[in-house]
Length: 613
Image 1: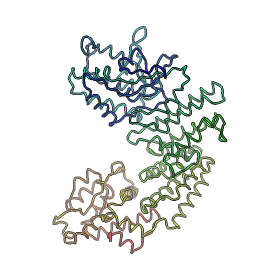
Image 2: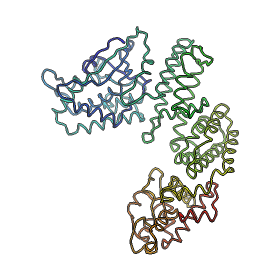
Image 3: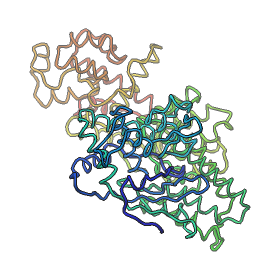
Image 4: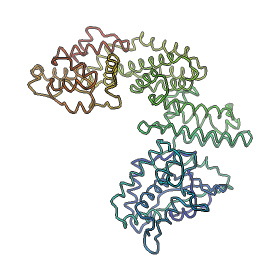
């Protein structure tokens, strides 16, 4: 590399314009990285220099700006902090001493944005993203607050724009109570005391920025397979035996596909989608591969076996050409949309019953079936019968509940389900898939997938707290709540997202000596414990309702229950709360479980399960 220098930010930002290319991921720093940088800055002595890391750029002479190949996370964080600090000064303020200081306007113009054009009304951001990137719009409008000077249109919230927002709030809070002199010292530290290894790539060296990017990591954030894959594909386009127009078109497609991918991965900030998880499930669906023997097998396959220089140059028996890359990226683009709505069904325009059953399996967990359901949802517009999709979802839900909630078993049939996903992706025969899936699930039942004695053993062995410590309890109680809701045809009273450990109420309290519970108080402690944690004594409430009733008597709880969840309202119909009533309600829930998941309980097993004995 040419032009390797150790420079301060003031020297680097010497009449240059920087752009983060669209093949880069968005802003990924969170609390930990921001705290680390703030601590480094706070502890920096006024007279010392602090080495901060590497910045690698390539000068794009056509546009006269510099692509930031490495260091964008640090630089973005610094620009956000600088913007927060400068916003605390008036426009005409002088910042610093008479010799080394500058006006606020000069600092803004050097590091943040310039007024250009004949009338000075055009804004040119000094450091930012390439256009048509949601982060570019957000950075300009929400971070730099330029919405009043340029019409940027609506901003698009993604995981990465949320990170930008968090960083701005983080630094705004950090500097909120600092005096002017302290702020001036911070600016001096940032611009004059932080030093970077600044590398500028010369195009005549024959180096490709995409290849360089593959070898680099940002501080604390290793490059994901998805990030490496994009740059590998772009690099491979330069080796294809195709016209320049075709190659440019394919590069544009790759960039556009990854924009879509990053948009949907970060679309819901509260339910972040992991890059490599998505790529792993897509790899299993698209290539029909599965390997438990090594970590990240999709990374090795995609980068070391399939999308390689040798395969493009046809130096191996595996051929990767223009059409292969094109087909793969377009499928990836469809897949990320389907994957997002598979995980966030209520945001989709799917049929209502599909939304309901997707929501159920999301509560339950369904990693085994994600490649299969991704393949189905990609093809959903071509499947005329939504009922067949619902049947698949019901089978998935049944299998996952029995296998991983009642049995705690390892999924020895996982490979079979991945093969079905690949087969459907290739052939797209929904009824054939449904027949095979149904056969496997029913066969599992015939082979006693649900083993009653094993289930009893699990319940009785849950750290002596029986049902209360069972991993499937919240799901069963919520499904029972939805069952009662459907019977009443009423409105939703309890949302799954609001449920946590504190949402499970013991009607007869775990610890109490109140006289109103005398029927229980006279029992042996171990017996009282078993009754308190038995199925019929447990009910889902909102955290607010649960925290308000504590160890109160039943008549007090009954008043609260009467306006709470459907399950609690059902309990409020009892005149008092006795051991007999606890058993009666437990039997009702066991009957519901039996009908809901096609499992059978004998009279003897019910007695053991209801008494935790």
